[in-house]
Length: 126
Ligand SMILES: [Cu+2]
Image 1 (cartoon, helix red, strand yellow):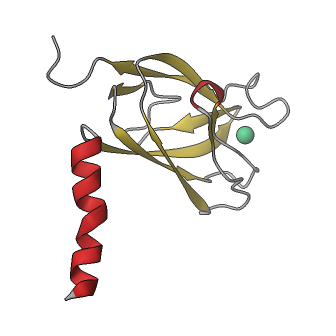
Image 2 (cartoon, rainbow, N blue to C red; image 1 turned 30 degrees about the vertical axis):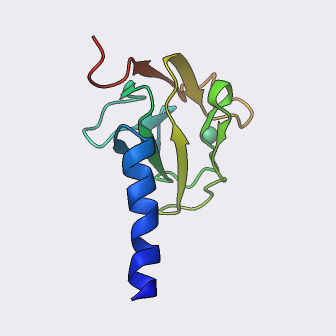
């Protein structure tokens, strides 16, 4: 029984402390330029969130080139993914504002690996 109760605690805390959980997958791609590709094929998609959302980002290597995902203003930095199919997960809480995400490895941002994350007011706020 104890095990079951402990397993529930993170869910309860998550539900109380965070407005909602959002999961995004970004796959790296190299086709002339470098980019993070969203599930619908959009290059460097703008990630739209609400303040306080618990965000889980899955970064998947799709091109065999080493990459890292970072949002310096939110203190977010993923592990490096080196080989095709390799994945890493970063989790953070969204703060209100607009921030750039990019790959910090030399040259990658300049070659196209940059996008925007937009965090609006808390859900329910007008
Ligand atoms: Cu990169």
